[in-house]
Amino acid sequence: MSDNFAQTVKQQADIVRIIGDYIKLRKSGAQNYTGLCPFHKEKTGSFSVNATHNYFYCFGCHEKGDVFTFVMKLENISFPEAIRVVATKCGIPLPKREFNSPDEVREAGIRRQLTDIHEAATQYFEAALKAPEAARAREYLTGRGVTAETIAKFRIGYAPDDFNHMREQLAKHFPDEVLRASGLFSAKEQNDGSQGQLYARFRKRITFPIANEQGKTIAFTARALDAEDEKGRPIAKYLNSPETALYSKGQVLFNLDKAKADIRALGFALLVEGQMDCISVYMAGIKGVLATSGTAFTEMQIRLLSRFTKRVIVNFDPDTAGTAATEKSIALLTEEDFEVKIVTLEGGLDPDRFIREQGVQQYMAALRNAKRHSDYLIDRAREQFPTRTPEGKVKAMNFLLPHIRRMPSVRQREEFAVDAAQKLGISFVHSKELSDAASKKVESVSAHRLEPIDRNEEILLRVLVLPENDPARILAVEQLTQHPEWYDSLSSAALLESLANAPAPPNPLDAAPDEPSRILLARTLQNAENPDSASTNAQSMTELVENALETLKCRQLERRQRELRTLIAEADRHGDHEMLTKLTAEKLQIDRKLREQ
Image (cartoon, rainbow, N blue to C red; front, side):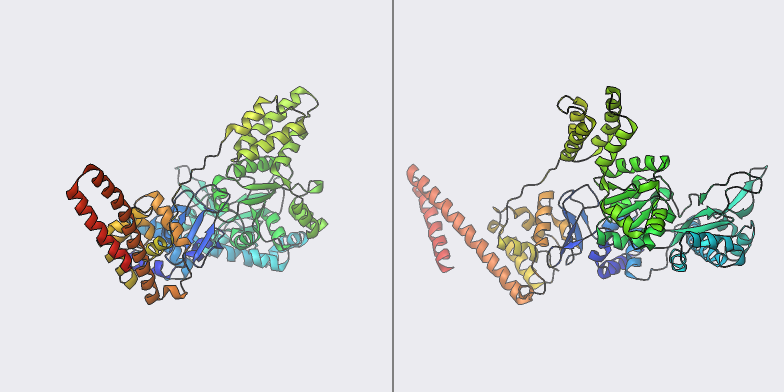
């Protein structure tokens, strides 16, 4: 992909909108936006996006870069891939891709066709749900309260009870290699180790497409209509697509494509266990809901979720598997500094059934009364290990200790430990284990201490990152390169020197000579005035620069004047008449210049 195309994309890309697709941003100035940094754990937003200069910077972890850097770092992709992602988001047509080898051409073609075959399969299943054979499937969905609107919204379908029909239909449009790589079909292994004839993986099942963040189908989960086959053997209730080049179960959250905007707006996500629960909750009007496609919740899914919110309500099924998944989710989420609450529905119901039986208002009330994760875990400990005996108290405490240690905040760990000690009937003063747990993980936050800069330094820093042909920048560069003594005593000296003696880089932060200077420049540009104001008029900006330079010049003369007074007194005390004459002449010259100002 050419450099020219990358520059075109970068110039047309709205960095605030692109980054805003990943994390929640709020306006903090005329052209600046802030939010929680996605690259490190934090509670207060130190992540800044500058719309004027098209860069981001984090004052906490010091990650920086342009729109491509952000997408590369967050999605863990290459530079060319980041260009394609940003171009697609901006609606910019991609140039014809160049490949280095025939293998690359083949792999790219297969991946593109895998996306196409999943769309074709989705349409095939949707059409099959309307056929006479799917009457039982439609009855089941109606019985679960699934409306025609819901079926259309989530593209629910039906896999016919046929081994060959789907393969025959798709084989008209896709080669055998793509059919085998799609995960839509199975094949029996032959005696010679080769794979035999393909047959449909999903049969006599209701199908739910699993989409990626862009809303494209990449896999399916399918619910069986029967509990047993014709020979009386049990049938798995749910069957999922296998891992493919498109789909990795631990990296996808069901319904994220539809829910992400609402999650940002609401400030939290509701996490449920299965697709049907997710669909029921979503169609009931609670839009910020996601499902894990099973009980497994992975670090990759947490990283994906953290782009949209750091607050989660978990409502998994109350059975043994669901309870274990809830505890695992709590552990992973709290370790990543999420605020976690837990909902346990009355009667041991799952969200889908609860809403159908008791209504969405009751379900919303349950969400409002969700327990803090610490309260939930303490209650779980008391349920599992009756604390009437010393042995029970020890077991309950040992159950809680790992959860306490995972919390990043020492204050939260202390509160959890004290609360647990009280509710378990353990004297906190004498409980070394709990007190050790509360102090086990200590937060360490380092911050650069920078001397404040004044208005004149701010003006010069802002003008030095303007385009090289800008009149105000030309004036500033000329004067600062000729008179480094004007600024060499300032806290911004290294930064001013670097910006004045180098071409303006695409990302101004790249010109900063060190981390403190980079922080200083980022803060200065973050607090920049409204670019539509009169001060940014070319003539007005030039005047501002002239005044700033004149002020620096006067301050330098005044500093030298003070130095000369000391030196003159020293020369006079030592009787050095030659030096005294020289210093006095220089002081008179400076006195004259200052009077003329």
